[in-house]
Length: 120
Image (cartoon, rainbow, N blue to C red; front, top):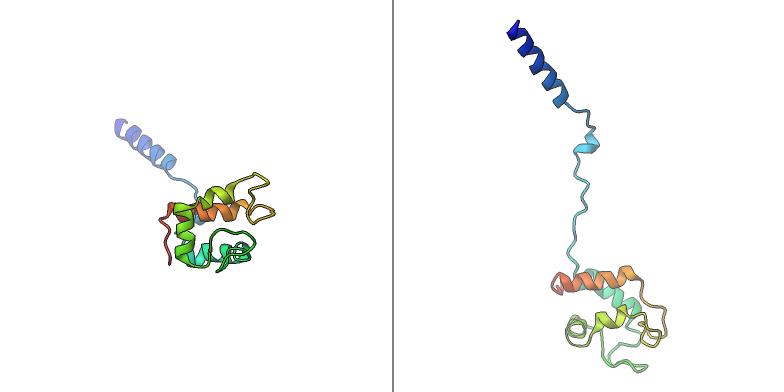
């Protein structure tokens, strides 16, 4: 009787340890974190939003050029580029005259800095 009871408990425990998972539950859905690079991610943002004034030479009162990797990297390291593009101050908006860059583009540039300002 004791063996029969033990066997019953083991079978009962095994049945509770089984689960009904689908194949979709077994797939890792965690997004792959992509490293942000200048060439692939940041340059298109700069080209589409900043080069109008920050060309070489800069025009419309822009103080610096943002035409090369080194220009943009230097602007982040030494000229407060992220502070400038993140500002909500109407007299400080970039692109000049506003509207402010969309937050997702600003976040991309911030992430690029966090990733180490990689070129490629």
